Length: 154
Image 1 (cartoon, rainbow, N blue to C red):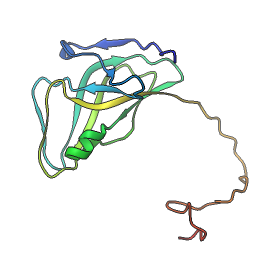
Image 2: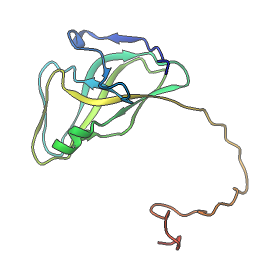
Image 3: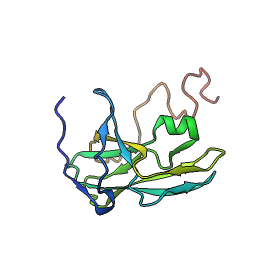
């Protein structure tokens, strides 16, 4: 697999922190670390924008998705609030991670803590084709929780 080259700008408050890296050869996401200057305490139910100290320039046709880390979610109930968070190809500001503490105890984010994952994804642009009728499918208009049921009203 050929990597996509992405220019990255390390901001002053990220000095001394490693660039995001893949933990294993087949990892889909790079670990984002907190570029906080002092610890951030998330009380139960609390949320905060955690800086990464990085700005990136994605090529057209790509987005970067900010996703939760499973270990934080399982062990502490801490997750990325707007998951996945999308970084558009034309955004040049700092990458931030909106963390929320769903756990029962306060959670402290320290400098250099791995707080999220960053996944690069290709996307396609769509063009609307207005119509008076959509093609039929077996599912039809069955909504949330309707798949896998013989009665589409379940």
